[in-house]
Length: 334
Image 1 (tube, rainbow, N blue to C red):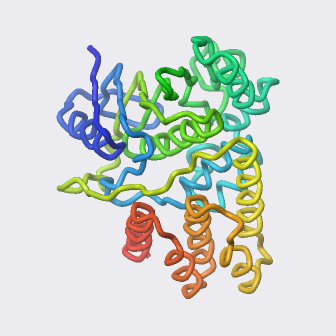
Image 2 (spheres, helix red, strand yellow):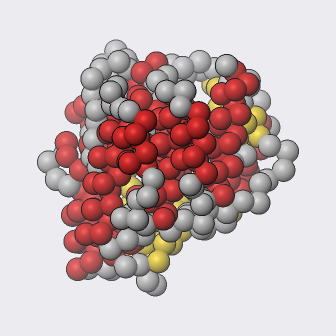
């Protein structure tokens, strides 16, 4: 049986899936513990720019989500970059210097071809193509060993992406073998709808639908503290990240360099301010992302005044609300 969840926003679709899983009573064992599971699920978001899941309680950390997709877009696999914004990540993905299943590295480096670059050229020259597949899963590396054990703690949950151009829009289908609705899905939606929007910008296309197929959509019974807001927040993401390809490359390089500096041990408050403020060289939509990751970098150093100043420089209400809920969560659990 296929379970289908459809809506205009990521939050709406996520809430529908959460409600369906809350009614699921059958237990399914897994490597990470007992779960409630639905098989063969389709999550269809009609407006992928509305990617932020605002209904999850406690709130997700938007700074980590932003850091993660910059890391993916730039093809990196170094653990230190993302671990700065999520120090708990090694508990789930392993403690190696590089992450085994890093999506961006697999998309841009490790398979011997920059798949994002190839996809851009292929669709630009042949928009009718049905052959553009971005491959993440690699059978020799990722299939379980003969005894059933995984070869790494960090086996990719995302398998591949299918891209189609139809009626002036870029359609994106994301295939996942396994998806944790509470801890994984909000981040997966950010990761791949951002790739979707960036690629649409490169191709000068509108953003079409985003469909995520999760072969196992599940929640862990141990995650009892995670829940859903009683009412759906009516807050819109106002940022448009679509840029021409060369402009996008320059912006990504600048933000990546800024984020590398923000996590340096010897960062000073003066240098922080020069990295974050008065950045007329960045489009406001991308500057908003930098402001949120900078606010979290300041929070981790207990630079409260700079944390507030960076967050207040963001003009995107969806990011502001998520950030405020995240900071409130940290205060609650401090």
